[in-house]
Image: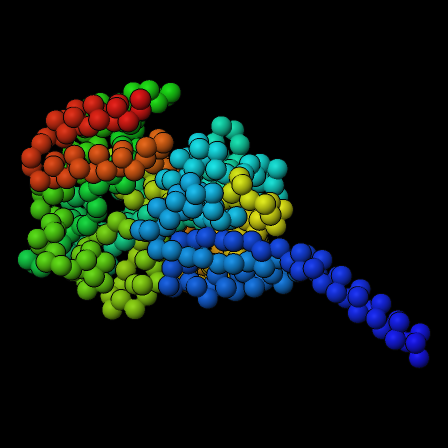
Length: 407
């Protein structure tokens, strides 16, 4: 009897001694993101559940924030030494985080998945891979086929120039006072793309010591945008009267609309036929390429588990399939078989344009003081649209301010 009690006591003591060890074996990885939003919370939960099942002993704590607050919160956490282990970055903010040595080098694992080369390249800094591309989206020319038919116009083709689009916009505008030919935002994001379409506009010299924003090519690119306003084919904010551009298109009152692939699902219930085409060109094609990535904090104390999560979020078949099936930004993987269901869906019929746009993908110019550059250019572009400055005057003044940001 004493022997049995002794064995039982020894067993209990071993359990007590092993309990802390078992607890220590459970690794917690903190993940901060902005893309799940309210529409894809369950999708993210599905991906994380699959990761935890495939990696017993690792638990992921998810924290999300809206895009408007996300980078302020992330920067605050990084500065205070409380950075999440794994977090999302967009291309526009990537350089400032990489330059300040807040990201772990992931070069050793970047070759483990078939990432789309352009997306992988976008998140390199000083020759190192500091984030893994998670998703991408492009911007296309949406068009209302009914309005084109009413105006007696041929549908847009991949060979269209902006002159072709302008002619079509004028014809559609003539259909009625409440019908508009085109809506394309006139701001920084469109400007750098039009600059690439122009072909002879560079925002900065090669070593980023001087801005070239007031060059002849850049002035021409900006003026080409403002011409749509001057011709009256783009509605002003006053014309919109509180109606968004997306509502204008969905209501059948807009002939052409320049926006992203993220609008496909929202327009699924539209009561008119619509389709998409790659954007018209000026002298050459150039298409927006937006990409988000997953990074690992340079200060994480769970680097191995954090790296596993980053790889799973960006390259696993589970994550890719969830994204495709639920219209959540396409995975940044060069794997055509993953996109078969996406390409087969309709509308729009011409989903192949999404991948055709990648052939001329451009990303915004980036500097460490990115937000200040964007705000500066947006302010001057607005003054040109409002008729307060000419394109040349605005970009002459912008050059002075951008040069100061490079010091």
